[in-house]
Image 1 (cartoon, one colour):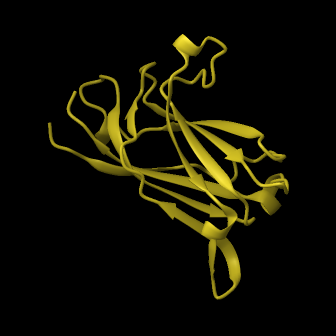
Image 2 (cartoon, one colour):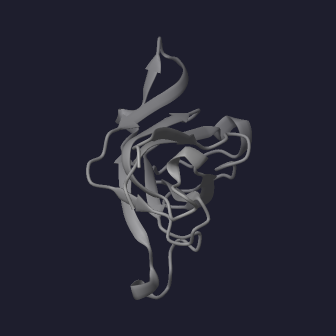
Length: 151
């Protein structure tokens, strides 16, 4: 199988639109492009980078899960795969205006879609003391670049 690279991006108008107080989370199931699936089998990929564009300068964490159930009460059933953390000072603006840009290139996060939905199960957590605003004032987009892996 040829390795493929693709970027999966949340939609700022439909994902992560609610207000989030400190330590609150929002979940999204992002569709994985067909070129990263192999013969209808589970998606397996290495996360190469995580980028955030945010209307607000806050501390963010992006968590990855193998199923759309996200956090489980039974630790043995939980499918947590890894996380990427950003502090507020990681956010940069161009010429002091517009969105805040965050970027990380984590090593070692292997993603596997364990429920065969061809989705990436992503949780966004606000770690700042200040709240994330709802709607356009708190608009945020998360982009995950991943490389497919042999099954």
